[in-house]
Length: 185
Image (cartoon, rainbow, N blue to C red; front, side):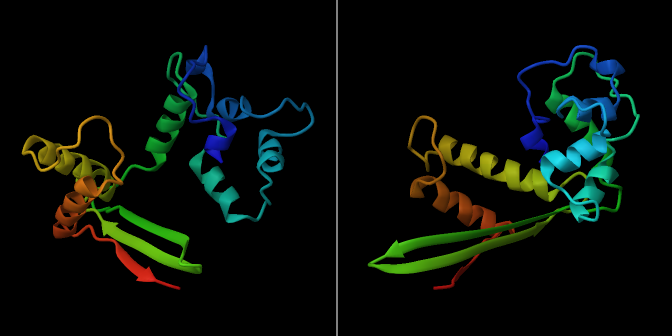
């Protein structure tokens, strides 16, 4: 939704953003309507019912508040990052969790097939998070494998080449980061 609105755009700066409120910021992505509130315009644009749990999350996020942005000439993405960091900060005893579920459908020899692949990974604490591990560890492992000559493919690659993904996934599995695959049909 926030992407759909354009709040993640990092290609331009909002002049005077330091004087905007989170409400002004949100309103800047919605069509002008002198008769409806920012909340109503948001509901109409995103087709969200008042009793939808998604609406509760948007209100909790504080994007309709009169809190000042306080960032000079910031991009929409920088402002959204500030809003999210204020709400999504882990407390000392908190742990984050990454849950991924993929559904792959394909046809093989005239038959429809389906595979479900899932991963659940819990971070250690507020510093050593699941998010940092699932992003940083594959990159670090890949860099190590390039430096020690295990990966010989050159240039910019996406990790769909067996030479890349097999050793990376094997090492991640040893660290407790394992996908579970289930053939459904």
